[in-house]
Image 1 (cartoon, rainbow, N blue to C red):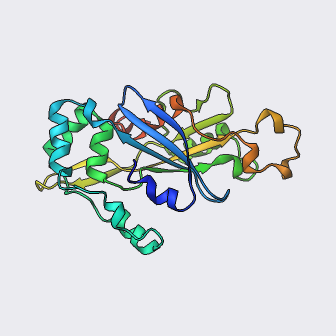
Image 2: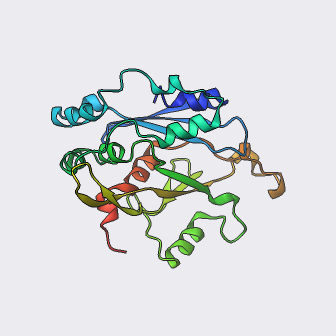
Image 3: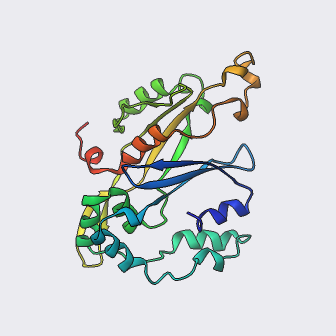
Length: 241
């Protein structure tokens, strides 16, 4: 995370709240954009030292050759170099056996060991959509009618304690993965999150055409995010519609 965040901090993002996911053994921060029209960034990392010795050894096998921060070798002002960095794998593809071993202990670890820095998901801000689609409950009905399977861990809609952040997500698309031992398997790819950020109480008196991003609920919610992570989990991807 300390390596990856350099790219965004360089371009004006501000590091915000810390989140800890105890069961999944994850740390995370979110980063506020320098301009309202840019996306929020959510970066997470696995607490590898809390995994079993077997899992740690598998991860070390693929990452031990990374002895210095690869981001330090990038000209962060050069967009082409940054894009190339995201697209270039930092370690070799795992064997299917290693992938499955990690999958049985940490589905997060298995996803990352195969997909590396590939985009895990992006988010559509539902409240910015045209009327009729700008409420998450109605938008989810639209998605279900299209045959899109939604992550129901913690409920189809995950709601923050203050009731101002509502989140849903699709179940990850399954992809055919080729492993280094010439075996293949269908595994979870990426997914889409859908968020509705409600207007903060102190701005409820504003007219609709006056509402800006800063008038809405910002940040994230640990309990919501914990369930959103499961959009790539086997329990969701194998569940029948």
